[in-house]
Every structure is written in C-alpha cells, then in structure tokens.
Length: 358
Figure 1 (cartoon, rainbow, N blue to C red):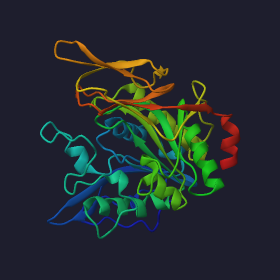
Figure 2 (cartoon, helix red, strand yellow):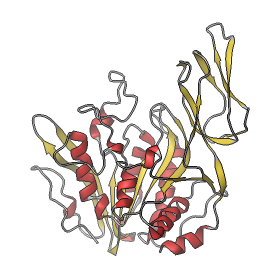
Figure 3 (cartoon, rainbow, N blue to C red):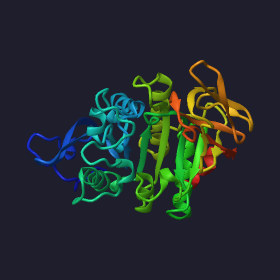
C-alpha cells in the first residue's frame, strides 16, 4: 500500500513520507539537493489510507499556475485518511524555485527554473547527474510517479493564458489497454472537453511527464483549468480540479462510491491546436474568451492603433472552441493571440470505458 522502499529524507530535519502511519496524513518538505550550487526542497503531502489499495499521485509541474497549486492543497485538507484505501501522494509545487520567483521583480513569463533556465514539464524522466531541474525531475519520477498505479498532473493556464477547462489524455504509447485506461481517466474526470493527444504533440511528447509515465506503465492524464495571468484563481476553476480528482479517486477505488456524472455532455477535442496570429502590429483587443464556441470567419478581436482606429480584424480560421486566449495588449504581426481546439465528436457513455479499464 505504501512505498516501503521510498528513500528517507536527504537531510536532518527533512520530512520523511515513509513515516506516515496508516489511516493518517501529514506533509512537509523533502530535501532533494543541498549544496553550495543549489538547494532543492519539495513539499510532499501524504494521505495514507486505512486499508490496502492503489497508489495515486497528484503533481503540479507548473507552480506559476496558481489554480492547480490551490487545488492540490485543498484536496489534502478535504480528504480524510480513514476513508481512503491505498495511498495518495500530492506534490503541490514540485519546483519551489518557480513558485517563489513569480514576483514583479523577476517577471517570469513561463514556469522556467531560475537556476538553470529549464522547464520541468519537459525534463522527464530527468537525471540524477544533471542540472537542478533534471535532478528534480529524476527524483519525482523515480520515487513517486513510476511507483504509482495512477497519476494526474494539475495545470492552471500559464502566465500568458486564459485556459479552457479540459483534460488531456495520451493515446498510442502504451498499447490498447493503456489507451483504454487513459481515455477512461480523461473522461471520468468529468470536464466537458476531453482532448485526445498523441506523442508528436507538444505537451505530450517524449520528455513530458504524461508521456514518460505512460511509457513506464503508469496511466497518466493532465487536467487544465485557470486564467494563468490572474494570480487569484477563481473558485470555479479550483473546484473543477478538486472535483475531477475526487472522481478519479472514486473510479480507481481509492475512495468508495461512484464518480459524479458530468454536468453536461462531453466532447472530444482534436490533438493539435489551431494558432491564430495577430494580422498586424498594434494593440490587441480581444473578443471571446476561453470556452466560447466560434465559427469560421467570426471576429475574435481587433488590432487597433493608439487613436483606437481598427488596423485589422482577428478572424477565426475554423469552427472551434476557444482553447486559450492570450491576454497580451501590444502585439507584433504573427504573435499568437488565440489557440482554438476543433471538436471531433461526442464522448460515448462513460461507464463502458470505465469498466474496460478496471
């Protein structure tokens, strides 16, 4: 039920997750690296159930996406260890350097590690002899994700995005059974939009956590919800993550009972997103936001001059749903101002997929 072989803390006073007793929970900081070059400490939350069951790991690889950080902490507070079967690990902010450096002075635009300039989300499975980001990725992957039965990475829209609420599940990597389980997780989560992805798509390619987890036999999905540019996440966005993870815990048998049925009919999205570039230099004034359905040729916004005269219209190249609105003000011709997702069809009944994966 619990990782009996989980390495002990690396430094005196560091939290040791293996000491959490059955039917209890605790959290603290694990020291991964302590040297003159870098000091890496990672928060680990452990909820150890009262009976045997699956090991489920929740991660946040983009700590600048505050909605997911908040949702991870809220899950830890809400869950009672005595009601769980198995063990739940929550890593609410894997890369603390990134969380701590989203300040007006540093003006991070992405979740880039300040000490080496690398992105954790693209650095898996990592290396114990690499840079700080690679060491961090190696530790998380070996000691948590690779030893789990199920995994989900919570995301909340990067700093330049207003992001559609949806899940991402990867197909074509681990065989038919893994594809079925991944699809089931992507739909059982409960979001209206479920994006089927492939190993040649940017956010699920080799090096991503979801790809490497599945390649090592661990079912893994991504959930997205949040307006990353806003440091105060909305309750709706936070709760979409919380409710979705609870659904997965019910589905996996970590919690008793059945998942909550989706609030509205679910649909699949195409793997590749459609980028909409600014057609001129100027001031971008946006139209529809995330989740809006748009038609081919519909006006998505305008590019204006300082006197507010319209220099060009931003038009939708296809029928789609707004996946991301980029809330930038001054743009150059060619800058991406929207990403659109094409709806490919309705999700079939959730229960057959669920049963196929069990």
